[in-house]
Image (cartoon, rainbow, N blue to C red; front, side, top):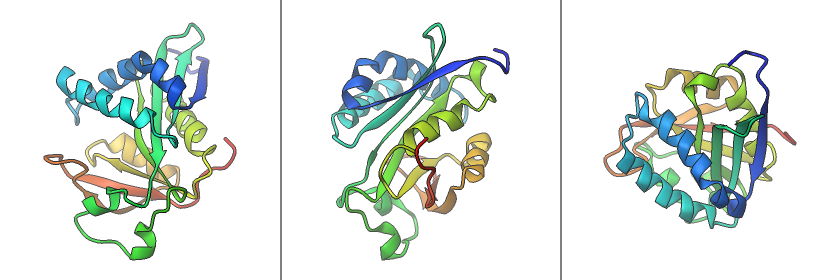
Length: 188
């Protein structure tokens, strides 16, 4: 793909994202099969059982990038964190109570962001991020990222995220950085 490649980035609610599950799954499976993740078909199946549940959440938002020919090349999705969100409980060290306070509107949890290898380094991840995060009414955004994914960590830092701790986001998961974007982009 050339640097001049054009992409369509569409923001989707849960119903529309569920209808586009195959596109989200294709991008996810390809991107997360790579190191440091090494996800298998079984891992992808588990992730998309979660995706279906998350897409039914009234605060779900997704973004899907396609080529002008309709080929899925990137995706992102997440939900706002409710008062009972366990995200903060997974940290290896506690953070101040004011940081971890959730009310269902304050924080958008970015669950996944991925771009297929052939379409990277063209600003597509940033476009997906801003299409998703910039249009939510949440004050801030939160994510987990594997520290060995140096490109993702560098991108998140460049976009304004700050590391606030380390966590094991699910049982048996390797350590991930927890990063917070306090001043999210508006109206992307």
